[in-house]
Length: 216
Image (cartoon, rainbow, N blue to C red; front, side, top):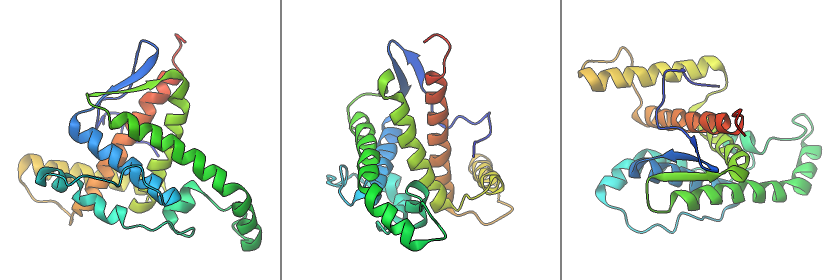
């Protein structure tokens, strides 16, 4: 599921030296780092970002729409978990459970390691998120996992669902810009998470453009 080509919610990655670099402001870094840590928690129950110092009121306001997202438990039947750790045999529970027992610990560890690398990079000072060329594919894979979790939370199962979300976000933007009324009741949490989903989509797409560039 992509997003409208004209929409670029954040500045994407570009080639700079031997790395892909995206410039993010402090709020963008904080939000993306936090959701990265939340997905890590969903995957393994250990956090590399939850030991959080008390945050200022402005930051608490920034993160308030993540509270419901963070309330999810690491349940093997959680739709978000099933997006990133799907059952190998959906019609045979016994086979699926055995395959999960044999393969899931290593797969979880790999995914969490990728997320941790991103979290550490975003936790550094400065506006630049630098991804070395040899880490670009792993970073893109980690962003896929985060987007899949967000998509599950947002109920994005089809392209039509994604288009409906884009319309909601566009409507919310129009309301904010004009002070007018919306044709439908908007859910602020859904719109906020949808905008985050769009931002991560664009970051991933721009990172893959870097990987596939012709001047390698």
